[in-house]
Image (cartoon, rainbow, N blue to C red; front, side):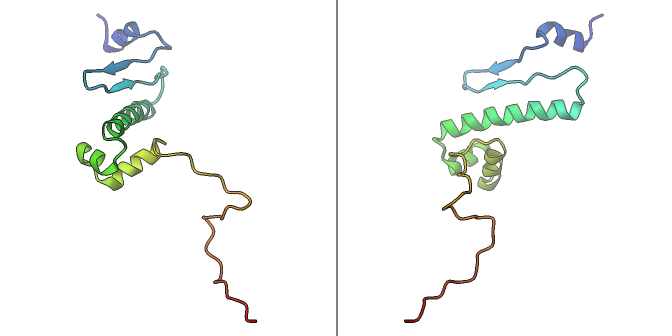
Length: 117
């Protein structure tokens, strides 16, 4: 008698990913799950793939408007922004620190005083 895992093995070749979509336009590509991978790690890969696809579609539908996107998803704006940061979906990448750019991680220095003449 075939088991559930046999069904999965026959459904997809070992290197394949599964794609799910419907009329709403949401496309989820599931990552490859290696045989013997711990459940927790495999589940996290699938959840991450779902979150990235969901958030991308949500932001596309609401023209990247955080307030409307959060309301539609039933999330707070704070939580939505945290998810966007976690999945690197928001805005241009941060500019690197370097010459001529202030180090924003350092505490501010002493106040600058005008020189007396």
